[in-house]
Structure formats: structure tokens, C-alpha cells
Length: 136
Image (cartoon, rainbow, N blue to C red; front, side, top):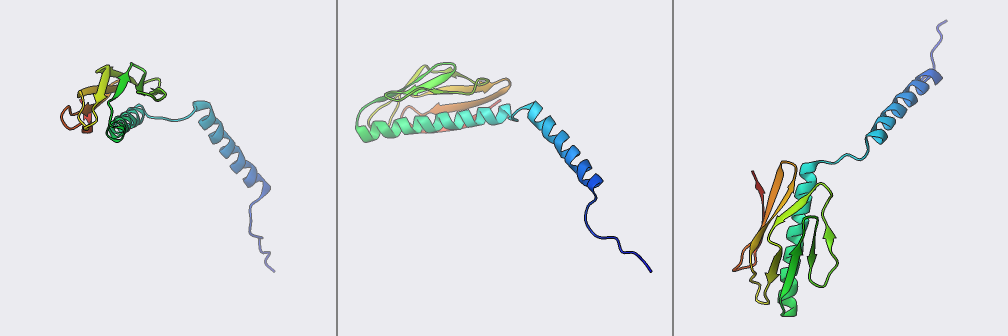
């Protein structure tokens, strides 16, 4: 008569699997949160472009000029709280871009940069159109 082995896992197999999962979790936790410099730079440029578009919209809606001020580590729409960029990202270019009630602007460019990754956020002076492009 043949004995049929019951299906399932043995205690030893479960211990080995748990030990491997524990090692993998320890490696992930010790390394810290994963992020990409390129993704941080692109996200900061997109957020900045969105803030500039919002400032233009506020200028049109309120029928009054709205300024956006820039520093190396933050930017601020007039009348709102400052927004900090990630620590490894810096802003260079115009120190102020002003949007008029008709949607036009003072124009300018802001370079969003981290290590060797650069994104340029450009504001057209005539239309106030905001565009983001990767720079080499």
C-alpha cells in the first residue's frame, strides 16, 4: 500500500520563506525611500509650471497683476504661502515674473536643476503661456 503525502508546506519551508522575506524587507528599510533625481526635477518643474499657470489665472480672474517670486530653494505666488522645492533641486533665472490682468506677463525663464538634470520653464511675455522643456 502506498502512502500519499499530504499537500501543503512543511514548517521548515515556511521558516525559510519567512527568513528570505525578512532579509529582503531589512534591505529595503535600510536603504531608505527610493527616489530618482530625474523624477524629482521633472516633478518640481511641473509643479512650478502649474503654479505659474495658476498665477496667470488669478491675475485674469481678479483683474489685477500677480507676481511670482523665485529663490534658489522656493517660489511664492503673491498673497500665498511659499512653496519649497526638493532639497536636491535648485531654481535659477528670473527672480520675479509678473502676470498682467490681460494674461500677458513680464516673461522669462526659470531653470529647474538637480545634478546634471535640467528642465526649463519658460513664460511667454506676450501671451503668458507657460511651457516646460528638458534642457541639455
